[in-house]
Image (cartoon, rainbow, N blue to C red):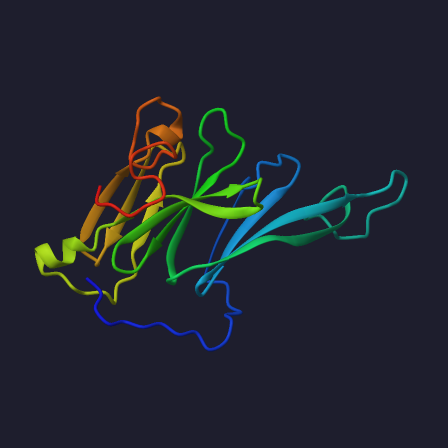
Length: 196
């Protein structure tokens, strides 16, 4: 458990430490980019301007074929209470157009966030802490950043905490299997902290 640790950021971070791309806003015509900068999450949307017919493309330009120009536009920014240590995009649940993001923080904490189009903001749909593992097993090594991985179908994720504990996270409801899981937006742990 954390005791007496204070984090004060003197200036906003300019370094992007983690990023994930996907369809977080639910708009299929644009790509989205989610970046973490220190204790902030920023969601950007890629907007492309189509090239006019009959206008030749500049020589050697291929990344955005068929686009005259493109720009990243900030959709929302969320200040967090801790630094993101690991990030992974989760596949869209069946019947939903928006993808979700799984975040890991120090002291074996995880959260699942999704974009809320009504408020134009990111919201937490599940948050869990496994920091009691350190007290039970006596493993307090926190110099190892948590490592987070998820399968491509979004049915499960794994968190390596304290460099020694492997935590498996079922994400069954997110995959549309109809099973109530701790990480579903209608499940018992939605929006709060709780041990899984």
